[in-house]
Image (cartoon, rainbow, N blue to C red):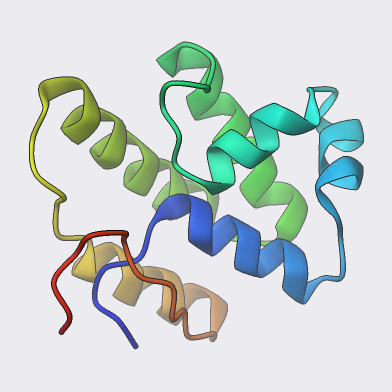
Length: 116
């Protein structure tokens, strides 16, 4: 398992694992599909403001069966890093907790992260 996984990649993988498409998630959340894609791609430039996005990430996690607390923490760390211009941050502990909570392993990597 890669030690660096993004919140968007975790949500995308969980969605795909459940056989759901972007449109079905968008309909359930009552948001546009491009916002779901922005969340999955960690594209902060296309996401709504932080407060709205945080709630959307938590709702998305609930729909696809991912621990909302863990994924929200991952989102907030990534949003903070983006907003402050920090380099990609380490999420190993959060991923470990997510894997423990779900019993699944996640293999998506942060774009540009060093190979581990």
